[in-house]
Length: 286
Image (cartoon, rainbow, N blue to C red):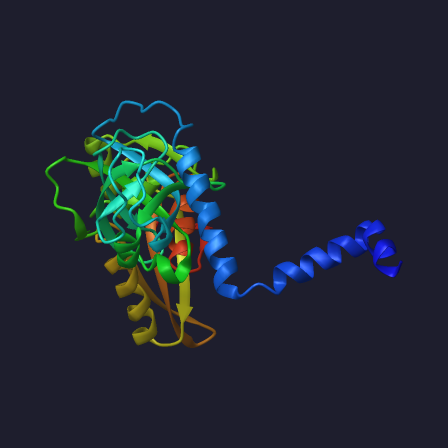
């Protein structure tokens, strides 16, 4: 009689069901979860948008994740078998065999991968890297990270590679920097001209904004920060300003000279991604 009353209570039935699920060995729960993910991946690969045309100057910015051993040997969207030890990736719409140079905005590490699958199917992710490729960007520890991906030539070797010299120009070319992800094109000539704008403003149009990323009591500390910024992008102009404040010497690290505040704000956000805080200052012509 008591058992009959127990099952008549929805709450009691739920508790009983939950206890039964939790009583399963962890390995069984893991295998079931893996089967669910594999089924979802296979199903979703059949319901994706048609591939769109690729521009030689196309750039993608957004979040990247990865997928590994539970998908090993499964058919990808292209019909190939997934190989977690190959430099491949999944994208929703890029044509198969498109090659991308994927750069982590957090670490500056880059890897070239080939599109052979569809996905990712999680919220606000633009690309899923294979397990092998994810190691180059430290994704297995991070889980997901912000990346900038460029379409590269079909003959570009797959695997780890150097980061783009114009990484800052690529970031500044983003027309929607506050959006969670975006796709845009960057004119190579415009990107090449972006560096001098950061390096120094024309005499005819003096800049009135700069990014101050630190104020230090010693020159050595300031030079350490300056060197780090220069290592991120050699095209960025960084200078050291030494002066006296209340009789004490101070060293400030200043980045760029800009004619408009939005330009300076874009660089400030770029530096913040690398863990370098700063503030935009309006300054008189020095």
